[in-house]
Length: 335
Image 1 (cartoon, rainbow, N blue to C red):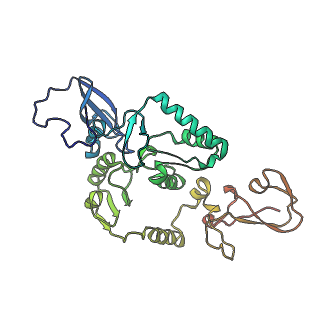
Image 2 (image 1 turned 180 degrees about the horizontal axis):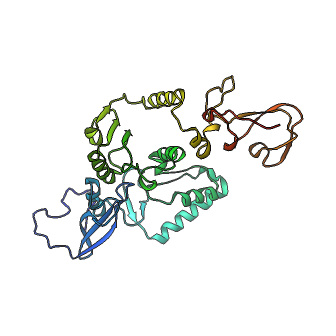
Image 3 (image 1 turned 180 degrees about the vertical axis):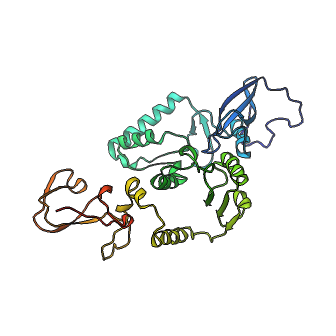
């Protein structure tokens, strides 16, 4: 039996081992890439992990992080059953005793029922990676607390949301860069430990085909080491660089205006009216001159609003109402 805090080796490294007796194909969960792997078993126990050459994502390539998944699986510190702090022990002492699942569920039911009956907002729910966040979030809202979060909120959700809003997709399970058709690839601050296997394969083919690779990163390691051009910006200046790039694209009109009008919400992002909100991301102020009735979802919940005199309404802008230049939010309202 393993001892959690023991310094004894998990196995004898020089002992002759018998070959694996079974191979099962599965998915690696050491990062969000979800590469295909083969789990080699000996008498039902995991003894080796390698890449699955038949998997379309990583095509047999596996990184060190994926190979080390066996350490997590066989770790003596892995929790396999509910643990309850021993009576009389202080928090932080690490003194626990195993209990049954039924007892664990009974304790949770009693505690959560008391919180929900008094003040549900005192309940905070946080889940780790690879949980169904839509389901856990629904549970928290039904419980009555706004205090819930998950791994993605501290990791990649901001990146995924930004790319989905701009180019319609994001890395990992949302898709990757289209390097098969690209001639220039700009990588900005990509973590080395995510999406690494498909990225290695794609970058290798991309560079062999004559593509140009630019990496923007404070350190030149990993991907940046093979870049055709490395731009070592100072840490924390990413926002300034992006704003400068966007400024030049808009100033030189190097953006695809019809695409922005048809497929994005660009026309409602920037406030152009003079005042404290000028130039900021906000809802558009629409001047209405002689409209007798209008629908404003945000202001009155789809109720009919009668307007007798010229007013300014803060309301969402319908994309097809926008006119040039679309990215500045100028619109025309028919009388």
